[in-house]
Image: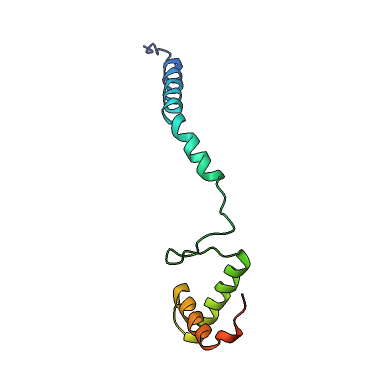
Length: 102
């Protein structure tokens, strides 16, 4: 004898999925705007380059400072951070104070 197979309907599964999606959409709707605002923020061209410094510099000056840091790393043969480069520039400025330009 052949067994009588009952047909299964996936309507209830589809309804449960829709309800879950609706709940999750409502649940995260308030935080979605926070995420989108964070992505829209753009890095400013001016700002502090280090927490130790409290001045703003132009992007061209930041590029020059990065190049000086790379030069210092190559000359020293070891890692040199920005604050070390700035201290070296201060020492150089003390020795050649009359040549400084503002």
